[in-house]
Amino acid sequence: MDLSQDAVLALAPDEASIKAARGLMAPAKWPLLGADEHAIWGECQGSGSKPYQVQVDRCGPAFKCSCPSRKFPCKHGLALMLLVGQQPCSNSVPPVWVTEWLDSRRQRSEKTATRPQAPSGPDPAAQARRDAQREQRMQAGLQELQTWLCDQLRQGLAPLMGNTAPFLTLAQRMVDAQLPGVALRLRRLAEQQDQNADAALLLAEFGQLQLLLDGFLKRSG
Image (cartoon, rainbow, N blue to C red; front, side):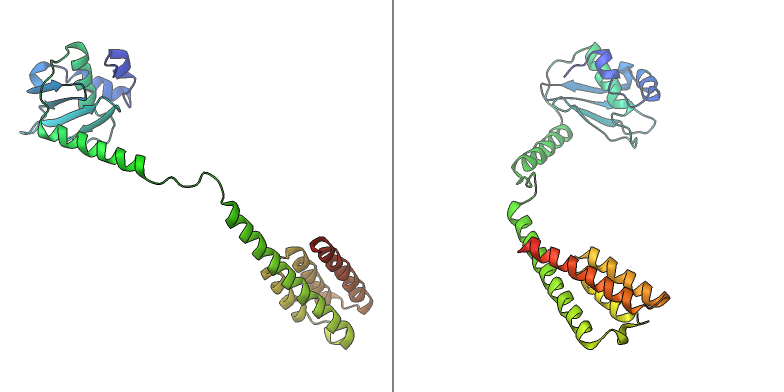
């Protein structure tokens, strides 16, 4: 880990933190200061009776301080790194609060490394199942549409004239069957019946629906 002044200051969250850290670099404010190959740590005397516990994991770098600041690193972490960078500490035995923190970080890292990785892309088998299900719904919808058209032509168009309900009901069925284009045509037919019922126009639209239906069946055949 690079503890040169430029490298440490580059980690600062803002200029205010740098200014505050420089004010904490007096050795008298640090009753405890230590370092080894894994971490650096110290206790910084603040306004309270109990000093703040400050620690830096060299592998991160990662920071932890018992102060209430939400900045990372906080002014204490910056001051600690600047101090050790200017006056390297001899290797010493870290206190328990440092070793416990390092152990917890190591355990989290190991769990992350052994956690099964999610597939990076879509599952081809699942996609094939979804496609097959969609195809089945479409085929069922097309068959329902074909039956409905035949029934209307056999019974005559008179019951449909000015009646929007049959078209809207069937349109919703086509949406469920994932045939939005067919549903749109049926809604337009409902609008025509609501505004200007015309048997010749309705018959022509039925012809267009049959052509659309034939095209779908031919494509899927």
